[in-house]
Length: 439
Image 1 (cartoon, rainbow, N blue to C red):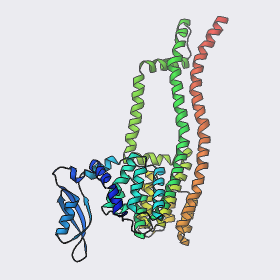
Image 2 (image 1 turned 90 degrees about the vertical axis):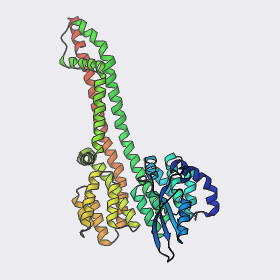
Image 3 (image 1 turned 60 degrees about the vertical axis):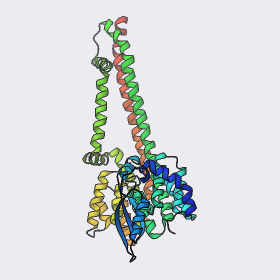
């Protein structure tokens, strides 16, 4: 099946006006640029039948096609090279979530498997996707495919919008003529990735909510409850315990200089984000995550699941191992692991087997390393990697449950401790006053 083909002239005419309107507002369509000239690059077939490249200046794609024909050549592909590309990257900066990618791949598989042309499939998806940015990306891809681009080239033109694994798999599917099968496999891949992300998000939501509620409760006690006791203590003239003085001073400080506390918290948050935004900062934080006992286990299992599934998916498409390792490292979600896998790639170029190199990283569990070694020896690396990924998917559930079992009592103790300190600080002088009155 030719996945570049459109749906016939009827399909093109049906969507012609819409595409022109979309191109005019997003990609600076040549007819609306005024009288300015734009740069174009072409792929064309010359009189001897060879595929050659060319560059032109013109005010429209049709003008370029005419210039190519005037030379006696046949235009194969014409695309503009101008500032429009930078606008596309800004417009399409937000990346789609795994759930949206899974749906996109599943629908593409269904339509392509049913024999629907690629261009028509893109038009249908672009019209029904609810996310406006994703719909704009799909429609831009449709325009590019209509002009002769492959689907993978149209994806690459969107900058970093699509994950590298999807672009690599689509490229492989186009070369082998199995694009619909690749889309089905990628749908399953992103569905499982979405399940892992959902589990991690659900596990992290509870501590965040509990922490926010605890902080709000403590601030309320310090700013609204404690001041009501201050007058009673002052009128009694009794010597206050040290813990009571500390709480009262803290209450007064927060009430009078709240902006300083707010500024400090804001500075910490902004500083942390700026630090993590640097290459060295992100590397240090990701390495630290793998050294904290409470989260090391679950995080390692999540990384192992992502790595093995991605590697299995890429190898199934016949992509070279070095490319697979590089892509799998980029989707691991951890810069430290990605750096380690880059070192693995360098050693693979020297002819070293994969399993011992993965063991040297000290990141992956011994079981996973053993499975990779067995796969290399038996020639069934792809199948064993997929089974390993399935195993660690199930282990992620248990690991997150265990982590929550540890975090829940710790958070309760911390919250109870903060509230308890405030209550004790108020009760101690009250008990002293009661004893004095009774005496």
